[in-house]
Length: 318
Image (cartoon, rainbow, N blue to C red):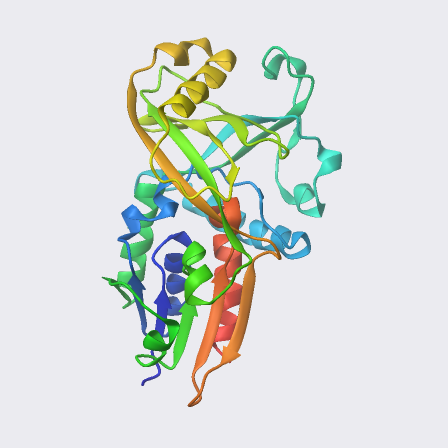
């Protein structure tokens, strides 16, 4: 036992929380079952936008706190993986958003000439779009520069972690279903297709919360990410060929040149959705230790990462 902090989980939530703790002067270690580049976070399309995350009254503030960080990181896109990119959220209306929307510079109703054929409305915005493999590598280097470390190691129980540090922060995402015994966590499966970018510079989304399918494309420096799906309680990690064909076809109806783009790969990630919303909570452990939970971010882990990290770090300082 020591004054160290042990963060369990090496995705964007775990690494961001570890960075905030390390830069506050704590000695931080991260234990992660999968290397950061192999976590669910590495698969994310990673456009900043409060999507599938609750509670709404807290998610807006968490999102804005993260937005301010990403806006600064976008000044160094090659190192951080963060760029500010313009695009359109089809179907969305300003009137349907929370108070946070008033704090997003430039967010407005899209003009008719900015919408694809067949779409009557939407929102135009210039938002952070994060290249997750690059960003996860940057987070790890920032953590290490602050004296932290990352160890690829499976954790069989939170009690095991608590034997090694006085403060344990649980950032295990869907893994908290078993580690924390939280049956309110469930997977929402997302499948993506990676293709060569045929020259598309703006992102596009069209999401229907009542449907298991979505349509979006996100331009990254070396690829175009096509999506997607939102399949609840689906644990399949293998890409489905028929689903991949449907994703390409939906995106090609918006931008026909996508139909001919060479396919580079397929990805699947399981969003850790929690029916009662994100859990940021502390509990005392036998012997005077402290366990802080920070999980259940659904499809908005990147969007709320810094705000939630600050909230979790505040609890860890008690």
